[in-house]
Length: 545
Image (cartoon, rainbow, N blue to C red; front, side):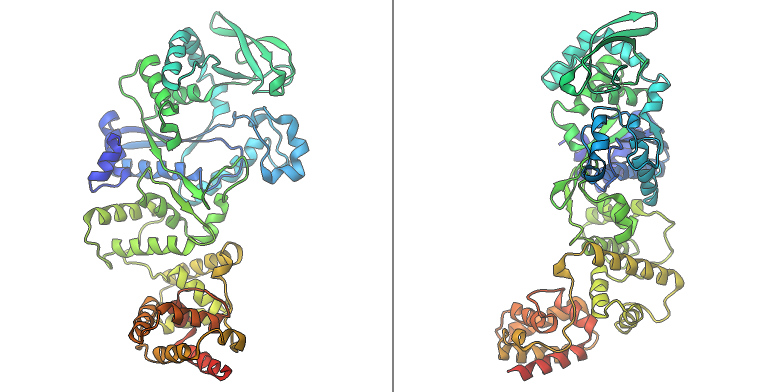
């Protein structure tokens, strides 16, 4: 466990606070927070985690009085290693000749932007802005053209023996090839290998072999570094960029922090090659997986960021990330988890506004800080009116998406006030549309249902008559004013009182009301449909015996 993790674990502090305090301790009030992205595919909620992690750190640095700049390095000089699944069918043949080329030199197959990289950049940046992630975008290609990396190319070659020793000590193998250089003949970026070099005044003349085994042309050429596009290999590029941009804090996936990983090599270069005393704070975050799988923009796996605001308010996603410990992984299943993610946010909001209490001080402090950091707009003076997402999903389906009927049911159940303000009604309308989109496009089939108006006797007879009779009696005895989980608990207690397994009650409800084995929470379903209507259907079902 490192210093940051220890502080997060044992102090009543959020990780953003712990990191920010450490950064200020090291570098004072002038801070540069950085994140990076290679636009080789659509921006998805997996790589977006890095950007929103850095957003929280920057916001907390400002909260603590620091002057903080937030930078997004867009690596548009990354190579096209594979053709994404979403382009293969229609554009695979068109893109195949560009494999191994820098993505800012690959054409946009859709023809709407100047390059392959620009196509995804134009999509990704607005998505970030929707989540109040607004770093200053800096393009790698521009940094190289401006000569920001030139002195580092010279430095690494001058200290090549030290670099050999450093990389072998850190990674276990010698890194003897420092550059990617575009072949002047075939334009391939990944195939050329530098086989010789010499310093000519302030320039570096390099001799290249464009390797056929890497889709190159096989030709040798001699050029000055910079005559064609070039870049440092990843580990060197990262350390150099941090140095000349003055990065004080940067977050990356915890795979970069394994022994011998890029964090170790970057810090070693800062110390031993750049001769720096104060090393940047390179923190590690856990992964957000999608249905158990790590996400990838270049292969087309995962959920595009563009979809997330259609199913949940952006601040709920931010809260989900900010409430987890920094290095904790969590899995997001778009077909199941959306209602629970929304409920977690709603409970945090209740805690923030003092409508719920938690005895555990550490839990309270971290929850409130996560909620504060997740906010996009100015917080309202009083707690907004929220309709539980899962309950709303159930009511919407019970009412067959008749919005006016949904509203009336929610008012009747005292979930929405009769005199609801325009602000709160706008919030409801927003969540209604997101829930509708989720049901129609993402919700698991087990969570979708239709009410059976006339019970099917084939389904009814799968339930023992005495169970149905006891269930009907229990529902009639549900106290007025009970809603949702209170109803579920009451039925549970009623079943136990007559020595029935509670699951028999719940399965009977699903069989008769929905014509299936499972469904939403029983109390929520009864609450949404209405006690009188449930009784009507169950009494009708008795005629089947």
